[in-house]
Length: 122
Image (tube, rainbow, N blue to C red; front, side, top):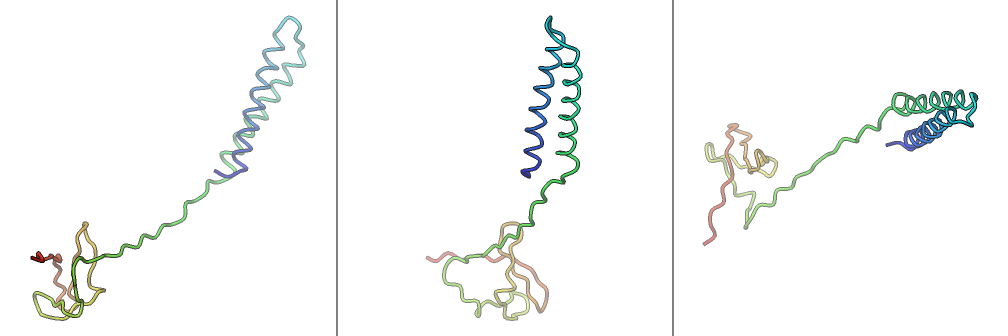
């Protein structure tokens, strides 16, 4: 929230509270009719401040977030030795993408897409 909006809302709450007390005081045995007028004017000022705080100052737009995901392949993977299963074309690190939580490879030559599987090391 912007500081101007916060100040506007706090000031409006103070005006409305004090104005309500003036209106209640106007109907007391020692009250005066001038207090009623002051209370109504204070209420109007409070509601105008609420309007100004909500409508005239637009909310802050959240900045766009860029998420970078680095894939850490387990074991000793040499990228120059990975070849496409279909056509045998060499695959580079730019051909590996993350889709659905799994590392997927798309061959730039034949456009075949498959998931990278890790063989057990034992």
